[in-house]
View 1 (tube, helix red, strand yellow):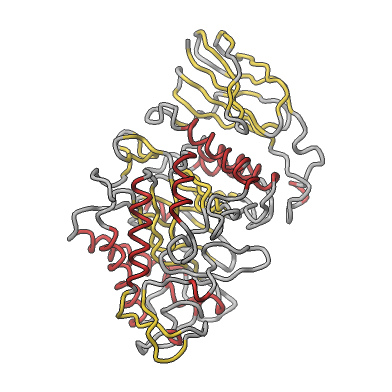
View 2 (spheres, one colour):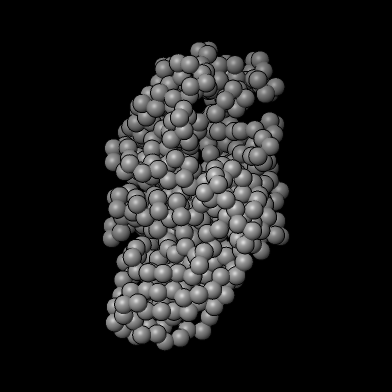
Length: 501
């Protein structure tokens, strides 16, 4: 059942945080690939119960989008087999859609879909889990566009033919009218839930030079703006107002993911940015790693988060897929490091855990012991902090042990948490330039001295292990400029936790 409180909102005392049911909240997840409702065999009750046990706070839900398995994008809940795909529209025929099943009637809502949607949102609400409901998505190419109910060959509603890039534009009035009606219907259905954030479109893009005449970024942004308005106007007549998340359109050619308009101009409450190469902000470009590359790129992850922290809107590193294809210790370690670094820049983090699929809704024994446990440790540590008053602490750390990159977070003069992490790239990383070549020593033990500038006071310092969730006994240190703390050998990462006595 839906909560009785106001919906999740921006925290009034810290605009980088969320307020949910009276408590500050960081959004963090190792989530299934967003198909819990559209994929009939997926037993989402098991999945959501596991999230709750682990203290994971977010799940993301695609409402319409369905995609295909590829060699580097594995099977997932968002890739249901055709008979198992549950769309928002009934399949009535006459005639067959391109996937071989009956065509859709876009005027007839599918009762099974909406029953699953409400069951999912109610179950998530009971567990205190926030759901980002994603209304639409890029369709990427003809094979995926041909799975979409709005494709002219897939429905009985006399839709005009449109190319896949035109799906995220207003070039076809009949298509946009159908999209807007879909958005209104979903927004009305989910309005009474307090655990919902609405995203307009996943990964919108323009300027696709391989298909001459395809929509520009400006056209895609105008489409996004129009759908944001549909959400706002729909909710204006309803009891609750929900946060709206998203990003401006990226450019395919050349590839660039700009962010300034998302933060400053578009009517988003929350900015979702995929941590990818050539993500730009304030004249700088941040290379946060190639898709499914097993790159770490931790310095860029940190620097982008710190650079944008002054913006008024919360930022979520949405759908981090830099190593998610790799269901092994190395891939999971990369995402643990990126998750800690992201949260210590004051932002939020979403990683797709491809170990979660239908009939295996809590992952594998290995993923439960590793990435799912590690995300649990991170969530519990973050929510033990004074989040309202905590912030990134740049300039506190003067020096670190060799090969360790630091990200500091906490309350100045009260609690300083320094995340120390081996930033060397592993040998399995693909596509790295010579300037960032893999190191054969990545993951070898690191030790040395951390030098910090602290106010003059007495402190208790301990070490927290992100892999076990355990802390060492604390020792007393005297603060002041150039305070030195000796760090014993650690592998991959460790947290130095300094509390004023």
